[in-house]
Length: 189
Ligand SMILES: [Zn+2]
Image (cartoon, rainbow, N blue to C red):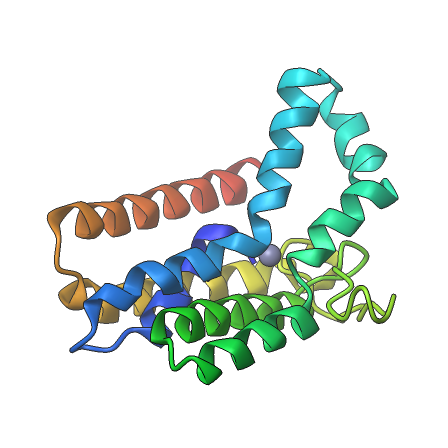
């Protein structure tokens, strides 16, 4: 699933009316598993100046990068952190970890050859899901429609719970951009 979709859906699922200060932790946990990917993209494109073809067909699959990606998608590590959060009764940590976990569970069922090793470093296992969130040969088109609908529903639910104009504006902006990108992909593919 796309990073912004994880973010919106996770914040909506984990939000509580009386605790708006926890939204930030749900947001950070929803985004963190994908953060190394953005850093990878930045380094490969801006510093190493590799072509997009080489980046996604070769560099992405280098073991060094894969290990970094998968550490951030490791469910055992997240569960340990979640346990620590409950031990210290820290809602910030537990909400953050639940959001990371939700991200990983969603990805587990929506990735194929690009799947993460969600039990790394304890196991090299990857689950090749029959459904991909983007590959058209593997229900990618249906998955995209469901993803867009899910973020709209989550946003409608979340919007009144957001306190600041900035967060409300950001939510609307991300929705509009997602829909424009989706429409562009449908038209031009
Ligand atoms: Zn992800």
